[in-house]
Length: 274
Image (cartoon, rainbow, N blue to C red; front, top):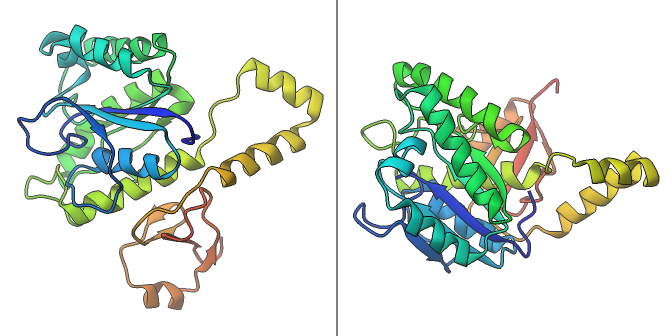
C-alpha cells in the first residue's frame, strides 16, 4: 500500500482510539509517531503520515464492532464527516468486538462499511484482531478473521502475526504503550510492503510492458515512498522477534533488507536455513 500523497483514515475500535475512552470518535492526526499511545491504530496513523500521507484521521470508538457501528452510533454524521475529509485510503482495524456476534449479520455490516468508504472513492484495506493472551479468545476470533478475509480479499492483513502477547494490558486484549508501538510498526511494515491487488488495467499494462518491467517499476515506487520511522524492531521471517540481538546473531540468522524499506528503524532477518 502506498502512503505518499494519500488522505488516510484508520477506522477502528479501542485499539485505535486516541486519548480517553470518552473522547470523540474522529481525531485528525497531525503529530509524528514519537509519542506515547496505547492504541496501535492511533500510532499507525502517525506512521503513515511519516511515510508521506497528506493527511491522516482516526475514526474509532471504544466497543465498536461492524454491527454496532450501524445500530448504535451516529453513523450518518460520522460518515458525512469522513466524506468531507475526502479519503483516498481507509484501513479498517476491527474484529475484537465482533467476536461472539452473529457472523452473518456482522459480515453484512462489515461489507457495508467497506462499501460506504469505497463510494467515497477510497481504497479500503483491513487488519483483523491481534493475538490475545487467552487461548479461548483466540479460538473464538477465527470465524471473524475468516469473515474479514473473505470480504476484503487481497487487501486484508491478519493481525495476529503483527502482534505479540508480551507487554499487553491486564485484560490480555489491550496494549501498553511499548507493545502498542511495536505492533503499530509491524502493521505499517506489513501495509507498506503489500501491493494492491492487480486490476484489469494493470494486467493490460503487464501485457504491454512485460511483467518484469512492471514489477521493477512497482518496487522502485515502493522504495521511493518510504520515510524514516521511529523505534527499532527485529523482524525474523516476517514476525517480530522478542529475544535479544545477541541471541539472534548466535542462532545463525542472516540480516536482510526490510521489504518495506524501514531499515533505519527495523532490522529484518531470515532464520537459518531460509
